[in-house]
Length: 307
Image (cartoon, rainbow, N blue to C red; front, side, top):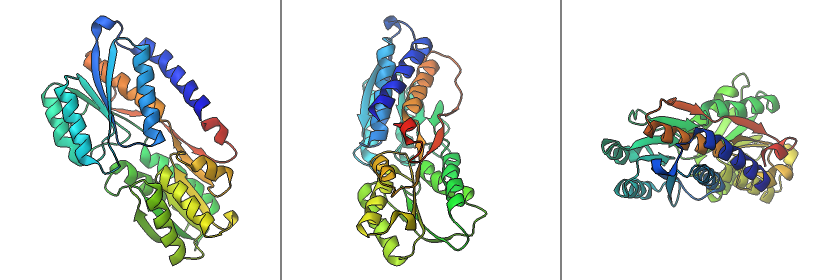
């Protein structure tokens, strides 16, 4: 994982040199806020730091919430960035209710670029740099369609219901799965945590002992489901497990054959594109309103390419 990250960050640095604001005299002061402490968001922050290192004219202050539901913490970080005089904020919004704090920032002349997920019906942002989570979910559903048949049962580990990006991962999966008559026997929120992933997966396995497949909309719950399957003594060829994010224990689950596939995002690319769009917009340059950072299916056979 480290070697892949260094390669990505090196490429980001080279790209940033050509796209950045130029000289230290043109100092651009930004805030960079992510949701909560997991490797995905750590990778995003590292990419932002690589961008800033390659561009002396960019100064970035960093902040992160405590959990996937730390709305008050993220609002406090936004307000702090505004007080500290940033010209732009790049953030992964934890919940749509942070929008009023962002509106105040925009009213103060601050540019805002969202990353990872959108805020529905919020029109004051400059751009959204993200995985197309619906299409990425379809990648998972299309894979499940190849390994499931009519009459099979499926349990779903949701992320945080109501967060558009996480809902899109589920809805996209269901779209990709169309054509196979699968029975959904249960779906539960996990707040994208391994602990709740274990709990929801255990409930599904208890309710449906012959459960054929589990889909997890985040990496930590996927790893939790793998632990639940292992703890239950279920042979890996008896159940299909598909995750999303390829992080937080999924690599080990794929190696062990418990997890069958995951959908990888490109968080470093997402962060670099988001920061670059923010810098350009502050400089008065035109940027695309939607910037897709891509996604890909990861299996045991190709996982080395995504480390």
